Every structure is written in C-alpha cells, then in structure tokens.
Length: 336
Image 1: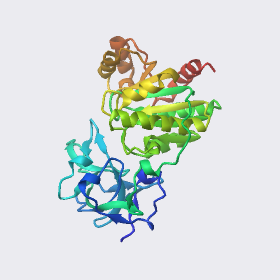
Image 2: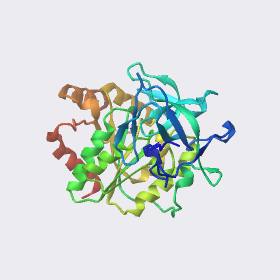
Image 3: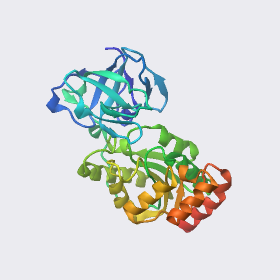
Image 4: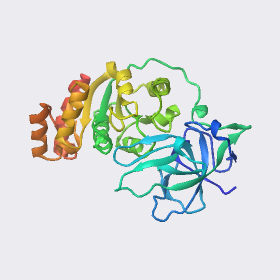
C-alpha cells in the first residue's frame, strides 16, 4: 500500500505511515471515531490541504491516501456533513483539513468544495478496527477545580481563537501557568497550537478525549468531557483558557460544556460578529458575559452600539491599547 498521510485526528494514536493495514468493513460496523483510509480523487476545484499530526499543512494530490476519522460537522458558515450520509459509492469528503471524514450535505457558496476521497477501508489491527476512543490511554478521572477563563461565540469565525491568544499571552506574562483548551467544535489542531505559541504550557481539545468533533450525542459528550478535564487537571495549571468552538446554541454540546464547568468559570468572554448578535445570546441564555469582543467591537461605533443594545462593555482586542484594560479585568476576576 502507498504510504498514507496521517491527518491530525490521528495524533492521539500510535499509528504511523508504516504500520497502517486497512480492510473494508460492512456498513453496520462503521461508527463515529473510526480511523479509515481514503484515496484522494480529483483535486481540481476542491480543497486539497491536509493538516498533519504535528499541525503542518500539506497539499495532497490525486491518488494519495489519507488516514482520518469518521465524524460530523455542522458549521453555520462553511460546511455540514456526516459519515452516515456516505452512500454506496463509498465517496466522502474531508469536512476539515484535520481529517474529519464524512459526506458533505450542505456547503456555503463562498467555500470551495471539500476534498473528495474514496473509501479504501478501516484501519485494522489484530482483526479489529482502530478507533479514536480505543486509542486513549487509561487515566484516573479526577475532580476539576481550576479557575477557567471561558470564551464563547455567537458562531464560528467570531474572533474566539484570536481573543484566546491575547488572553493566554497576558496571563502567561503575569507569570501564571496557563493551559489552553478547546472544549467543543470540529477537529482542527491549528487553533490550539496558536494558544501554545501565545504562551500556554500545554494545550488540549476534544480530540484528546477521543472525539473527531463534539457534534455527538449528549451521553457520549458527557462521558468524554471529564476525561478531557482530567487530562488538564494533571498539569496543575494556575488557570485554563477554554474556548467553546462554534456557539452554545449549535449542536456541538457547547451548552453541556458550560454546564459542566460553570462553577469554575471566573471570567466569560463573548465573541460576536456584530452587536445585534450579542443581544441574541443574551436573550437565549439570560446570563451576561463579563466582556464582548470580536467583530462586534471592531470600532468605537460598534462598541457604543453593544453598550446601547445590551448594556455590556466591549473591547477591540486586536488593538494592543486595549490589553492593559483587559489585563486589569482578568486580574480582578482571578483575585490576583
């Protein structure tokens, strides 16, 4: 078999390009989190980038093999798809560059078509399929009692990761041991790597808990999140900067994540694309964030409108002049 490229969803496994054996399985044996091999079809007019285990991006070519995992994506601004929608042809798409595999069912007109692949088989070992959940080491599930700076958004691409980088950088400059985490969303390693670059001592996301995305049933997510929080707790950080990908109203279990860490949240940042979206989240959750950022705070006019509509303070975190004020808010919230 041609040596395959291993997408970043495989980073929790011991898979390597030299130990991949695949076999086609009957449809009734397919499931979320299964590692599968796909053969790249025609790349003309399609996205062709794959994120490798270490986060490096490469361009694949027709005929290349890629190892990823079956999962679900329900992005409001880009693509929707699910492995359950794969038909008898065995053709599917890379729903993210991280190797989240499924069949696209809805696509933004502003996005190029996701990479097309042909099912070659499940990754097998000792006549059993290799899965994300089965690749996890056993750990002790411990109590989570760490202060959390929680970043939520009105949708994807609302400024959460950029804001998280700023917060991680400020807290690490204060001398704190900061861990970065992404609790919900669809697999992509680059966001967490940017937290690492900003000063986080360690980074984790739902992939580390065996999920290709957090768009799973509630019971599965409630089982996975304590595992993820226990991984974080083992590092004994002073504070966790946690991003909830997409928005809590989308089917990524963001509301469940907020519920399970609610008692530890010391500061909540809402990233919104416009001031009116801030009011929507206020109405839906009936609980105010401590600060608004993102596109809704790009200008003084936007900040004033946020205040007028919601009564909430907002800062343009892309402007370094705002960082001193943000730092003061974070120190007060953490009682430093």
